[in-house]
Image (cartoon, rainbow, N blue to C red; front, top):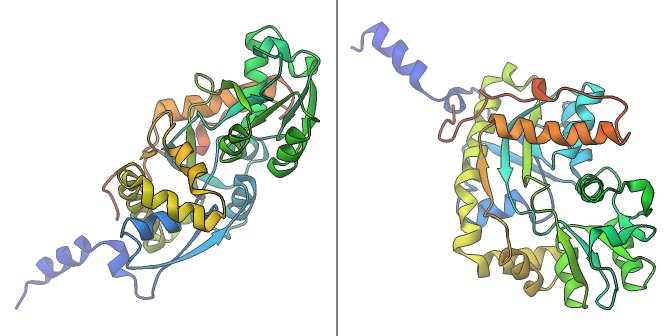
Length: 314
């Protein structure tokens, strides 16, 4: 017979996921062709819990859903959490993707006389308000003694921006993602990338009270660790990854390969550290300076250093 104390210790050693009486469901957000696709390609989608993937078009919408308690895990740029810090949203930032910044650019037409950011003064510049483009465009202009008020800002969705740029309605276009290689294939020229301004950080966040459900919290930690282990697949199998992305997004495979072949750094998932918090604080400070948010805000309380560490899934 197993002594009672030994049995108790053995039970406590079982991960929280396995101890759950009912099947655990993690409500996770992703962009199209996002984490769910990557986990399947990397052979890491067979989780001991159910993952209910929901597709979102922006990090802002993900954060709103998490704040409302409708999501357990999501991620986006540093911009949505900056607004959340002002509004007091109930989310916690628990890990951070370190990714590419070369896909975040300012483009000009191929025959444009514009040769530097300083040449943008008085020009029509497309951007997407309250996104990374808003932040890095402001920083770029500030570096050369200009401000957003010195250019003719045109707030456009990526699709509308592409049409306006293609039709000559913009002198320059601050944009990101696969819009960049598509425009370049049509002759657009990169005036500057966001290298040296953007960190490439994309925080993962949870709803603030997820720790009240130990089994679900353990499942979220496990899912984060699977994503961490899956990310090297992108660099190790670029052809397969590009083909799957292209088919899902309905964009040319060459467009995806162009992004993959020109990254500033491979995507990786890291725990919360001082650098991640400082990077988001820089975004918040800049947005307060230019009036995008109403006041300065301390973002540090939003970050949870202890929720997830690589290899810790319980």
